[in-house]
Image (cartoon, rainbow, N blue to C red; front, side, top):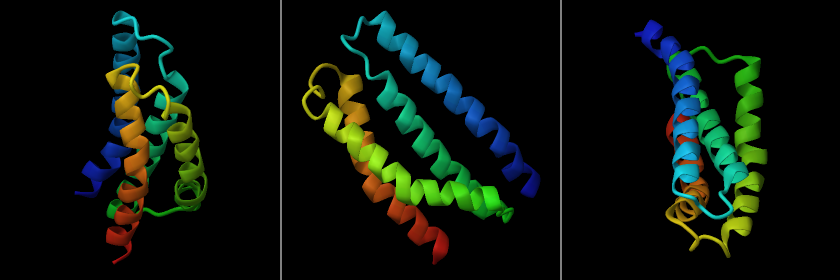
Length: 121
């Protein structure tokens, strides 16, 4: 079981990078006006970090790097998500990509605290 969880530490970032590339190619293919690339990178990075914190806790291999990641996820990532929400507030109607990134950024304020509540309880 522990081997499976540790394997996910390798597969999760690779899958995230491939999904990001697929979304960017799709946006370019559809000719999205002013594609939200920075916002997309930040959303993938923040949710990926949250996933790695979950995997660290489940695999019981917490480290100093996990602590630094958790501090980023709790204190810095919400600020980044607020900036994304602010930047996409007016452009969320440009495309579904803009809207979905706006929604993902907004949901972070529900998902992150719920995740830490479940991990710590």
